[in-house]
Length: 259
Image (cartoon, rainbow, N blue to C red; front, side):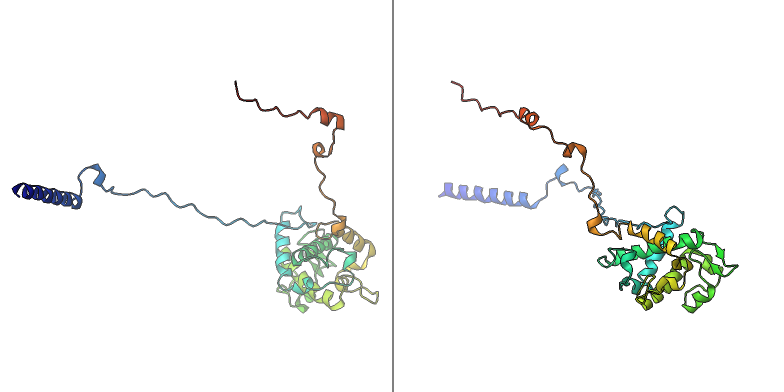
């Protein structure tokens, strides 16, 4: 019995020591808490950049060209929206694919149209004055006409600002083109639309020159007229059959297990 008691006492002592050891933190390097932890910064998630697509215009060579295009596109999607949501009866003469286009490509057409008109009105000179002091700016607008259509600029000097002049031109066309359902030629055969306010549009030679340039642009071409990019010569050039067969080598047969 005494032996059994000694064994039980020894087991109890060992269990107490084990419990104490488990509850007491160890000393040493394993228990050292660093003063500061270096945490790697999270990866910065950046948005995918949008494609800055600027449709082609005839004023692209000018340093202000991109600004004029942006201004015109903004105006077209604002007070010029009626231009984009209708299909003029004679639009096929100017832009064959216009009716099938979405709003962006329709806006690209009208931007290109204004750039073509500005060539004949002012040769892209924003401060041009014509008619003995009557017409001003890129598209040669009469100040009284600008005021009549409630443009935000109504003086000759203000119309010399290229962006403001184009914005006013969009406002005028959004009225006359919709009114006459025509870019230049009404259903009765008479001139109207843009031709109601801009001189170059009443001259067949200038109209044809403008329309010819516009029909060549990507935003006006019919899909059937768009040619695919040619494939590289090394892909399209076929070798003679004999040469191709001579280059074919049979695969090696696997070797059998060594004896």
